Amino acid sequence: MATSLRESYRAHLRERALEAAYAETVDKGWDKVRVGHIAILIGAPRAMLYKEFGDKQALGEALVLHEADRFLAGIKNLLASYPTDAAGGIEAAVHYTLSEAEKSPLLRAVLVSHRDPALETGVIDTRKGMLPLITTSGRLLDVASETLAAWMHQQFPQLNLVDVQNATDALVRLAVSHLALPGADAQATGQQISEVALRYLGLRRSVAGAGLRPAESVVTGR
Image (cartoon, rainbow, N blue to C red; front, side, top):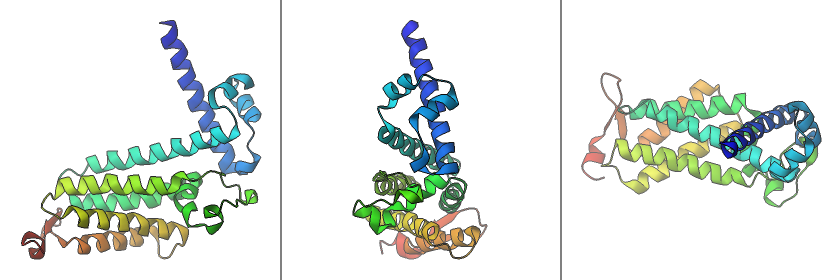
C-alpha cells in the first residue's frame, strides 16, 4: 500500500510539473524555464523534482514526449469514432492535427521543427524559445503516419499496403507543411489534404456521402 501511494504521488507530481513546464514554455519560451521555479509553482521540493527528471534537459525531453503521447492518443481515439467511415476518419485526423497544433504552440514546434535547417545541424537559437532537443519530431511524424496507415488498412484491407503507407505519410507531411507555412484556412486545407490521399488510393465517396468505397481501379488490382 505504501509503495502504491508513493507511486501515485510521484505520478501526480510528474504530471503537475509537466503541466507547469508546458505553461511556462508557452508563456516565456523554453530558455526562460527553470526547474527550481517549476518546483515553486507546484509546491514541491526542488530536490524531489531533480530526482524525478534529473535536469532541465531531461525535463524538456519528458515534456516533448508527454505532448507527443497526448497528440497520438487523441488521434487514436478519434479514429476509433469512425469504424466504418474512412473518409470521415481521414478528414477528422487531418483537422485534428491542424487544430491541436494551433492550440498547442509546443506541439506545433515539435511537429515543424524538423523543417528548420538549424535544428538539423544542431545549432539552436535559444532566443526563439525552442526546446533544444526536438529530435523526437521526425519520429512523431512516423508514428502518426503508421497509426493512420494501420487504421486505413483495416478499413480497406484490399488496398495495397505500400500504397496506404505512402498515402498516409504524404497526408501527415502535407498537414505539417501547412503548419510550417500556412496557406488557406485550416478547414479548407484539411479538405484539400484529405482529398489528395483519397485520390491517390483510388477511393471515392459513396453516393449517400456516408463514407468511401473503392474505385473500380482499386477493386481490379490497379
